[in-house]
Image (tube, rainbow, N blue to C red; front, side, top):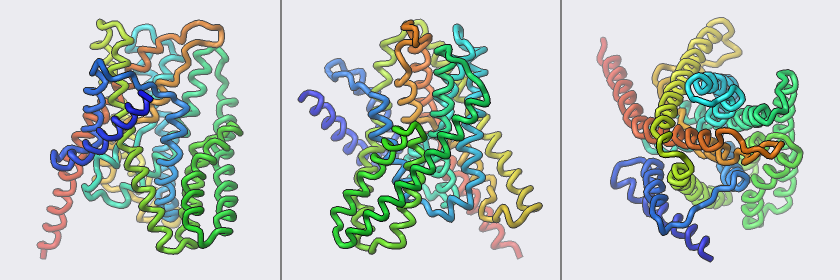
Length: 426
């Protein structure tokens, strides 16, 4: 009963702080993280354990499903090149880059351990970026790219993580086997999503007038699809994404307007609670992680986290601007393959680059590191990896999160000035 009281207390604090953030003119995610850190240091508050399996099942399916459900297929198709570039190739590039930094920077880190840290911190969290920039007037193109990236990069990061942990355990790493496994996970996830979308579409058509049944099914299908895909050892993340895209398309074609409005209202409340709870939980974990480390290592590890954050940001900026150049070249050479709407401008590239914050997925993966290896020995540098991962998550959310609204407003101001100058030019 005590744990139920803690959960209700956390939810109440989350709702109050989300409301207060508007009057303080501080992004709600930032305020919730700071509050979580403060609450975590209160001695009378019992420790809130985060089980990685619960995090993945409770948070990922509804958040991914909601984002995919509300994304237009046409927008996803237009920005598919950019989305896959950021969601796949940049994830593996970040894994490699962070691994190189960790291997030569952090004492005691072998190459396998460095790749584990790189995989944990390779995926960005669009939920954080969208939460911070809410109400700032981001262009639809920027929103589509950020949300589309988040729909793909979690699956890529989880694949890199699995193989990195296997390498630490001594099971070896073979490139061609890893490549085949990656293809199997991706294609399998897509197929499961398509099949489940078609199946649930047929089921929902049998209850055209029963709104409660339809909304209840819509609530359950992301969780069922995720579990079904994971049972077949394919990507549950991609399965839910494909399901959301399919169901969103079906909803716009079949569901009456009043049912769509009821569904939106229900999901708005659910996503609001989950988003707020995520950031509060991230803050709550930091004090517990600090207690597992030698005090003398805390300052050096924070320094390592700052350097890794800067390296990840520079890699992201370089890849985003390279993508902008590549799209422009492809548009000139092959006009039919790259549409004009897919091109990136400086403003969009800067905002997308600066929105590369880490979040709940990195935290859940880090906490989910095994305690022991297959031979029973302790997982090496486990506490160090978890602490540095949590520190990077907090640095990106607080550092980039606090400056991102300023950047968006600054670029919007320059854009308006440019348009005014153009209109006044004879």
